[in-house]
Image (cartoon, rainbow, N blue to C red):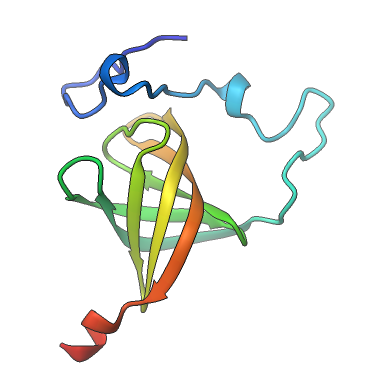
Length: 128
């Protein structure tokens, strides 16, 4: 497994942060027997979201929520993040705080799987 993302961005520095990009074999939720290993059902979605990368000075990037379960989600964004990165996701009237479990590079984007730490109502947007 490589310790460096081949990218023009300097945001992902695993040598300094201890993070890593997951390969498909390491983070594949379906084992070699073909059986699903996840404990919770995932629901496919395609909702636009705002993702704040809290470990990167609050950098805000657009994203697309690809699937969600009771305890986690997968979001597609344009930048890589390290494992353990803290994320804040804005979705409709909810704010979701999560921790990145993996980051996989796809053709032009990164798929980030995250564990939900907590959620709260987005009262700021309702007031404005």
